[in-house]
Amino acid sequence: MGTPPKGTRVEAVLLDMEGTLYANGAALPGAVEAVAALRELGVGLRFLTNTDSLTVERVHGQLTEYGFAVRPDEVFSPVVAAGRLLEDEKAVTYGLVSADLESTLPTVSVTGPYTHVVVGDCRDRLDYARLDDAFGAVRAGAKLLALQNGRYFKRPGRDHIDTGALVAALEYATGESAQVLGKPAPAFFRLAAESLGLGDRPGSCLVVGDDATTDVRGGHDAGMRTVQVRTGKWADQKADGLTGHAGHEIGDVRELAALVTEVNRE
Image (cartoon, rainbow, N blue to C red; front, side):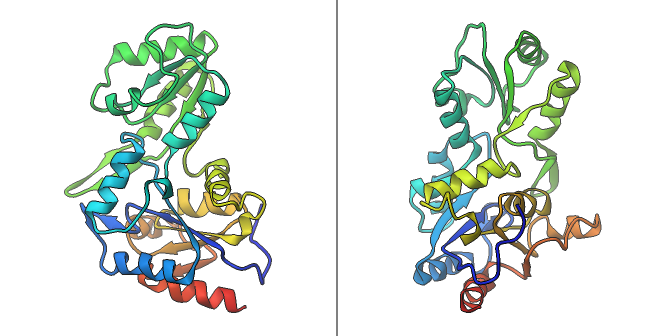
């Protein structure tokens, strides 16, 4: 959809979480205060995550543990998007997801025939039998849904393979393409905007994140302004030549309130 026209005010900020607000189990320096400064500006806030192994309630609990003042309804994840879609489509779902999520997704069933297969982070219970069950359901006609398709995520000591690799394996084996529900799918960002009453004005939303391939790309494709922070995955992606496409680039979220103020003066 491209960049919003100059003069469009920022009415809401959609903040990535890991690598942008916190890393390695702690808030990044000044991030708690940066969120408070945005609230003082009066803009709406949504906290976006591609975390696909935890419920929204547990994600909210992590944020509050790190010191952020956040309401549960301000947290937006692909789990939220999946729940809405599956209920709307009256799905019978095979869940290749964590045990935590399987108990909360509304349409997961222990028996088929299945209309949908949902794939998320399931490292706590992944084996070939479950892969074969998902493979068989898709070959029998079930729609393949990916909570997200990230390549890897960062943890202290090493990086870890992410859900996208598992999704790619099922796509290759079945010959079917997955519908991605999380970042960078534009629909994910538009749903977040709708939850703020801005569904008809995506250009008034500012997407902020460390990942050029999910936060920046997805926000841009949804018709929103984008900001890349030079924290989290930024250094790795800069080395790979993936950065430089955001509308704005800042050192970290401590500079964000000043940027919003500047944009709204234009």
